[in-house]
Structures are given as C-alpha cells and as structure tokens.
Image (cartoon, rainbow, N blue to C red):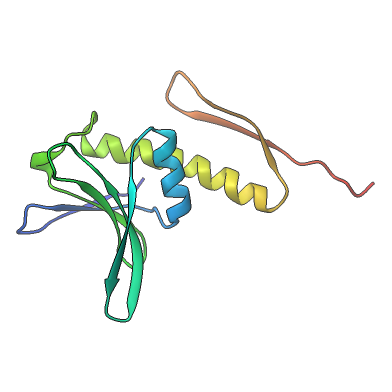
Length: 134
C-alpha cells in the first residue's frame, strides 16, 4: 500500500491512502473491531462524509475525504491504537482489499466460499459462480 506522510504545523499527520470507497472502508474497520462513526462535513459547494475513530484521550483519528481518497489524519503524539500508525493502516488496507474483492465480485455474480487469514498474515479468498445458462 502506497502511503505518504504530510506533516503540518498543527502537528497533525495526513497519511494518503488508496481508500476511495466509504462503504468498504467501514466494512474493513468493522472486521478489525475498530469503532468508527460517520461525520458529515460541509464546505462551500460540497458535502462529504468523514470517518472518526474515537480515542479515549479525546484526540480522535479521522479518515477525511481529500476529493480523491480518504486520508488518515492523526496527531502522532496522541495515538492510542494498539499498533503503530503504519501497521494500523496496513491492517486496514488488507481488510479493505478483501472487502473490495468480495463486493465487486458479487456485483458480477460471484459468491464468497472461503475467506480466511493465514498464519503468515495473508488472506485466502475463494469465490464461485454458477453458470445458470445450460
């Protein structure tokens, strides 16, 4: 997964991701038991939904829509998740990829038969589609 860190004077870090679909991002977070909540954001001539990941210290992490993808916006000094930021994003990216594969395959008639995490950290996804034109 390609990531870019941008540090701003506010000490917030913006991590570019390849997460472009809110539905699949929410499913990936849910699979990892990461609680998130939608937050409507309005700017002139535009409105979009960001995902907030609450933290007990009040310094929430947020996936913000950049116009092209969801960027993870965090203040690293107040990071409270159980993994370092890069590992956190990598885990989400792996689940996100699986959700995209399943969801987009279902649109063309495939059904997931098996989805498992292997001991090496990779995932196995088996899909099937029955041909009803016999």
